[in-house]
Image (cartoon, rainbow, N blue to C red):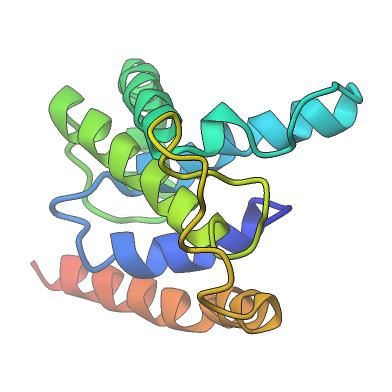
Length: 165
């Protein structure tokens, strides 16, 4: 998807119910990290594919690992945000944040691959995109936009569940 906010709804729908296993801020923020590639290509008019190495499962894995480790170093502000602003329970670990980063970045690729011809999710092993066209682009954009509704409901459910403890 051309703009990362489309990824936040589906990511929240997946990460919120699994909040005890996945690091919510890492899962959401790693989607921004993956889309830095097309942003840089567009911003600087680089002679590169819009969706290059960062939009492969291998590239996403590397981005997820690095993002998870970097975000672990920034865990205190994330913890303040999670417990203060959102108020949700939050107990970050390096292992958890790195694994969540990998899963979040790969999830980003799985959301983008059905839409874009220039994505080769299995590169360097294959230049094919078997996910291209699996779902119509208009339907995908509609579903990702509408996913904010269940994401909000899931957030309220997780928040109320945490308040009861």
